[in-house]
Image (cartoon, rainbow, N blue to C red; front, side, top):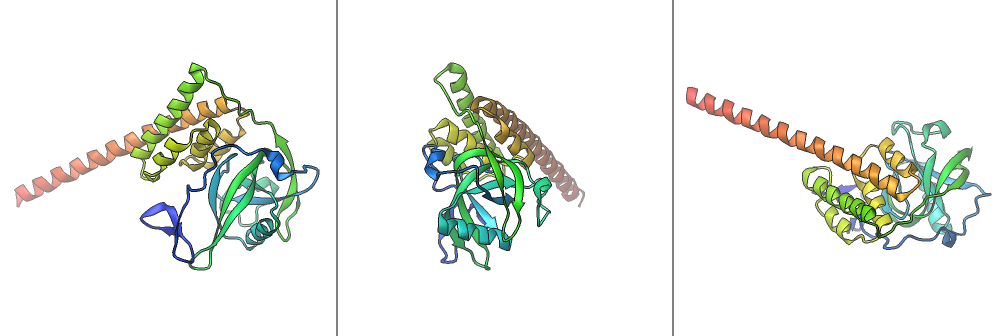
Length: 266
């Protein structure tokens, strides 16, 4: 599925290397462009250990046959899909109680047939944040009713807002340097995402926070609250990375000391 040297890329069936952080939008899209009718049912796509955010592009590996059928139909008919995260990744046939009830509306951008017979889909969140009200059908794939949620994405030029944006950028770049879970090229994406909403949502979606923590960020009703929560999470992860590095350094020093004593003894 992925290039082992760089988990931010995958190889398609033609042998081409595709970037997982490519095709990032530069401006939020208006949900009206999707012609959404919330009186109708929406196709529901459950995600394992992934939380999608508004205006973000992400690759999704397809494992369930029902999900593969869903994305093929949605791609062919250009239909929107509601993406929600499972509360437990171990459930193969999730029901309403197995899902977080806040998600986003997205569209299928591209479908890649991968080596080994697997499929990866590039999804772009282009609509509003939604609440999953109910599951109506589960065959041939999940369908349900959703309600749009108001998400205040307004931003200003105040000193507080600029400080929040700068803090998100600085802490995100610092975590990339310290973490072995993030590709160094992520800093390039952060540097080039100028729109505050897309920048914050990109970090929330792509950084190694727990699914529950990401859902809490998604639930934030306005951008400023989401940034404060993001800064707390980034600061904690940096602190943990520092502790991990200190432990590894101390362990190496202990091993080196033991080796020196051994050779001296010999």
